[in-house]
Length: 282
Ligand code: SF4
Ligand code: SF4
Ligand code: SF4
Image (cartoon, rainbow, N blue to C red; front, side, top):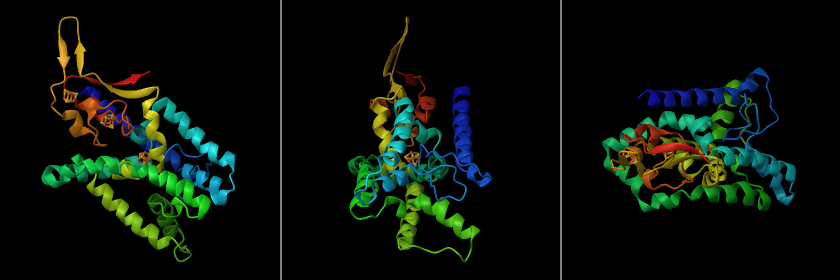
């Protein structure tokens, strides 16, 4: 119990510290780095650049500016090798937003079985590949050949960039050609995160798509031991599904092997009554 409360608290504290530090631009702090998570450079309080925007500008019109391309990839690659997708569970402000909105889909699942069934459907598993298409298609290919960029229609750009700018400078905001498309995607983004827990992270986030494969090789990861032998006794998985029901990413936890979708939130570790799940360093 003590471990559960501590872990929950630690994660809230970490997420709030990262949220505040991502917005210290309001006090004039600019780091010159790009964020190792999904956050917008157009936010009036931003301290750093959006990693996706840097990549898009780096490949724009086929004029490859390698410094701009390698810089965010090196930052994301370094955190990925060390901690896999832990920034999604512990640092990203959009992860914190979805942690907050996640109470709604959880309640919907309990009240209306149809919502639980959506999460178990085979199609849901394949939908998770969409984020890789968004990354390759809209962050890399369309900027090279058409000039259209993912960040032109990014819902987080609307949330922390467009809306605050419109509030701070009423009457002076000039909508660009993508304004209405971005607005529709923004509304769909909010509908999604209120009906599917971490819906944006599961299906669409291009930063999540960059970080996810690192779970396979990362130094820090989450491991399940379906049977633990002690000198006098042994603990076996009793298939109670407590870990699966607690997982915000809808992972089949007992059978996961360094699942790319795991955000290392530790909720399954808290939930397992036998202590068969743990953070591992290797
Ligand atoms: S998947 Fe994207 S939005 Fe979700 S927590 Fe990770 S970086 Fe943030
Ligand atoms: S498997 Fe466990 S640590 Fe990973 S996302 Fe699910 S609950 Fe969190
Ligand atoms: S919570 Fe523990 S005992 Fe229950 S299914 Fe998951 S691993 Fe097995």
